[in-house]
Image (cartoon, rainbow, N blue to C red; front, top):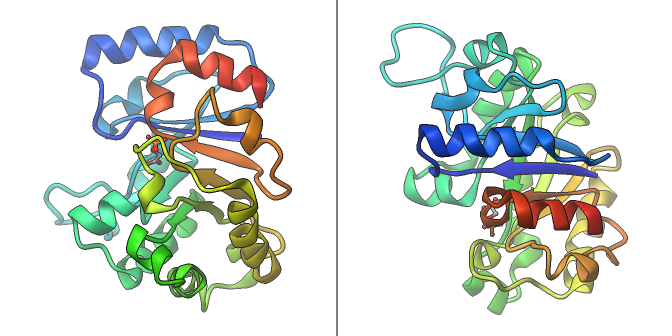
Amino acid sequence: MKIVLNHKCNLKKEEFLSYFRKLNEMKTNHEMVLCPSFIYLSMCDSSKLLLGSQDVGSYDCGAHTGDIAAAQLKSIGVDYAIVGHSERRLNHNEDDGLICEKINLLLKDEIVPILCIGETKEERAQGQIHRKIERQLQALNGLEQRKRDKIIIAYEPVWAIGTGEIPEVFEIDEVLAYIREKYPKNILLYGGSANEKNICNLKTSKYIEGYLLGGLSLSPEKLQIFLELC
Ligand code: PGA
C-alpha cells in the first residue's frame, strides 16, 4: 500500500526532528511518502521514506516572490506533490484550472501529482457526488495518456477530513469504481479520518490502494498500529 503522510501546517522544528527519527525507526513494508511543511523537506534524508510536498507553486522558477517551483522541489529529492487538497481549494480559492496548471508543471519535472478530489456534505446530501468527482477529474483532460496514468488520485470526501467520520466502505468503493472505469491505470487512495480504529473496516474495500493520512500521520505510535493492520 502507498501511505501518504500529510502533516499540513504542523510541528515546530524540534518536534519535527524527533518525529522524523521515530518514523525512520518504524518497520513496515508499506511505501511511505512523507509530506511535511516545505521548510523541513530538505532535512529529510532517509533511504526508507519517499518525499512529497503538500503543494507546488503555479510558476516555473523566476520572479515569483513566495512561490516554490516544481524544479526546486525536484532538486531536493521531492518525488510526489499533493495538489488540489480541499484546504487549498477552500482557503486559497484554487480552482480546477489552476490545479491543472500545477499538474502540468509537476509532470514536467517528473514529480508525481497526488490529485485530491471529493464532495462536500451538501453535495453528498444532494446526490451530487459523481458530478463533483467528474468535474474535478477534468483537471486530467488533455494530458497525454502516458503522463495521465502516473497521477495518483486521492478520494477525500471533504466532510470526512479531520472529523472522525468516514463513508461506508461500499460508498467509497462506488466512487472508486467510477474513477477506476475511466482511469484504469491510476493508483487510487482514500483519505479522510482514516485511522488505526477504522482501518480493519477500510481494508475490506476492493479498490483502495493506499491512504492519505492527515491527523493520524502526526502520531508515530498510532501510525505504527495502522501500518501493521493495513
Ligand atoms: P485527516 O486528513 O486524516 O486528518 O482526515 C486527511 C487529509 O486532509 O489529507
